[in-house]
Amino acid sequence: MSEVYTGRFAPSPTGLLHDGSLVAALASWLDARTHGGQWRVRIEDVDTPRCVPGAEQAILQQLAACGLAPDGPVMRQSQRGDAYAAALQRLVEKGWAYPCGCTRKEIESAQAVARHSAAVYPGTCREGLNGKPARAWRLNVLAVQSALSLPDTTHWHDRRLGAQQQNVCAEVGDFVLRRADGLWAYQLAVVVDDATQGITHVVRGQDLADNTARQIVLQRALGLPTPQYLHTPLVLGADGEKLSKQNGALALDLSDPWAALGQAAQVLGLPAQPAQHQVLTQAQAAWTRQFLSRIS
Image (cartoon, rainbow, N blue to C red; front, side, top):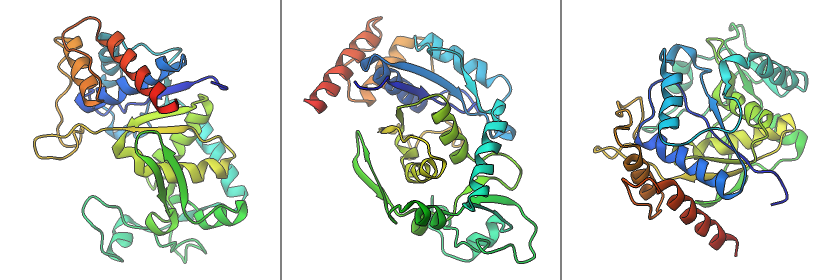
């Protein structure tokens, strides 16, 4: 490859890793190893009220038990506030970010919102607060698109899902960069951190695919590179919903790490056999064959 591959796994310490987390971790590790690249681990603890004491260390121990060791030091978002503040300041100086005084209730009450969907922000405070106190900071998507001659619809290619697109203004609106509680928003933190770590390839769960267009727009606004993206299959619970810490997903059973890895490999469509110490080697060989078939 013409560039040095750098991938990452970025768990949130709001609880222990579960089966779905291991699928994403294994996929990102395999992709990095297949490309002869680096695999970083970033602890996304920017949402400090939701972080569980001891979860970070436990997550790192879970990864180690599965033989998934990061290359280089672990990054922690809780130590990155100055970098996020500098990025926001650059956007403010360009006139591409503005304070917002709207509450979530006000935004949601103005429109019908489908289940599992967020309300589209209509730009209420784009031209001023109208006497409201400032709460959050938002990206002025229209201003960024106009200044940089970006299309209304953001297009990108997902290495698994294929061609993707989203009209951020119509489907999301001006999204939050800094929250009303003073915490940094996920979108800003991820974009700044990916650039700082030199991430060239993002491999993560399919539930995060919807964030990609926002992140690409923000990357353009900050003059940062856009990684390649691959979104992995989701692991579903008995109720058909995505496994997550929020819906009570159980922590990984690592009494037999190789069995857990084998199950994760099978979710990824790899023929690795559980309960064998060669599971990582087998999975990497299968992933490499898939990668080579895609580029041949």
